[in-house]
Length: 361
Image (cartoon, rainbow, N blue to C red; front, side, top):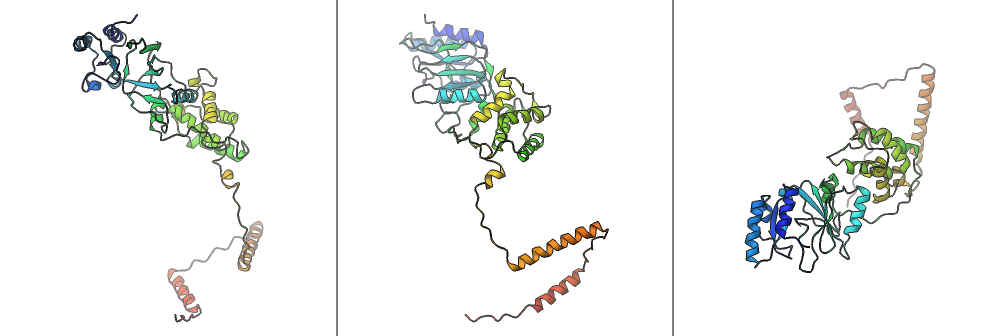
């Protein structure tokens, strides 16, 4: 049985008193009935009643729908577009593996799409094919569940969970420019866990890796750090061991990630696995110097006789220096000459250069 839309609005305000609503034309979600509706939306039940009475009279007894203004309500809506040809579900599943979607209130639209409701700073971003979130929009507003069309379809409540806080990665992803979802080949270009690369990874984790701090993009930071290790030829098991010992500690991660796989959104093994499985922009080991020069061909140029003589003389000098040091002979100090003497030597050298007659051209 379809409830009157006034009852739907008042019931929603009773459950969520901070919701700000505005009237929308029946069966036309794209037609808000107020000018500056996102600014004039109200959480006052009496104002909602007045709007309902006015528009029901204007539309000859047809009740209006109700939209939710996100900024005034301090909400952000993730709109998952599941229509044929759209990539909303694919992107949703990818982000679920990378980040884990927080459980929250979910409503459904007549087209089969979903609106995930979160508390947080409002976002309005279109999920084009070239965006970092194809098929997922951050909607300008949504229609209250219970608002139904004449054919019996409409907006429904799919998951009646408490509204969760918006995760940090929402805001990070909307700032990214055209992230490639196509994977490059993930065959390692060097041997995993070379000692020099392991030493480099430890130094990176101790001194150069950015801190993972909740509320400041910490989840994305941890994924990025694990990705750096992959790109530098560190295997997933070694990356977990190194990050657990040198990174997942006080002063580097706040809070510290759990070391089991439950819950997934707070687990270091899951974050590292997601980085190795889905951060596929660079092949494992491709960021190392060894990979840079593996396929380079260098031409071997023979030394000139003069350079051979210089190299031989330097070698003899090093041998003599070692011998003198073994025999307790102090190395000879280079005699310092004055600036005046040096300038005189330079003038002498200049005059000693052979004269070259300029050719007549």
